[in-house]
Length: 265
Image (cartoon, rainbow, N blue to C red):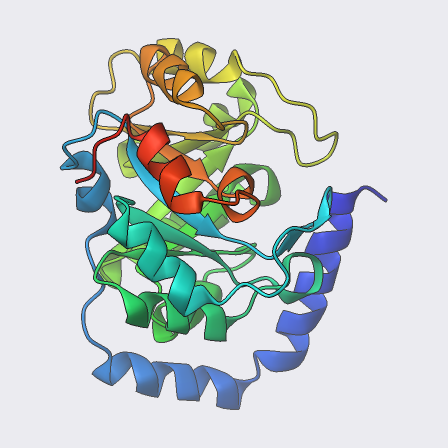
């Protein structure tokens, strides 16, 4: 069993145990009073920087183990925003990434920029759950979902005023998507099964979507330097999601300023 399958199985077990009818009713009650979601897509598309930064709050990863185990999401969110990050990505998967909904709530309470719940969305009811904890955006990993589930999640996210970051690992996964429903497409250069990085994948996807100026491309994985950012921009990215190179840096604020070319928005 590969690591991705292990993660999905453990996440599904938790959801089966914790997403009871009573829990669904609690979530609906929260949604009735929760303030509107912050505009995640606009935060990226309207950034003055050529490539907008989604800065990730992440304690550990299955491939590298502990990254920043004592991370305080409130402090890190503020540090990210003060140095120019346009949006946050907060890991909420507990077993393999050390995240939680408390991390999402704490990070979002520290700043005014929007936040993505970085987790494994497996069914549409999770969209409500993420929003009830303050998420402004969700992640949809195309490899894990059938087209009907993707569509349902996109519709529900839109109803809640949220943005969906639709993530692919291979060009063929575009075939599962109704691109008219996709506004934000993440291209992950690192395969979650093999962990191999293909830096040319972004450019290949961008060429396939040359006529789709309505879709904002986000480069994911392998971005560590300003040169990486410039390469991603030349390949077609207008957003980047950066995590490990920030939480493992002795000066994450300086790393953000470097990635953004010394400019803050």
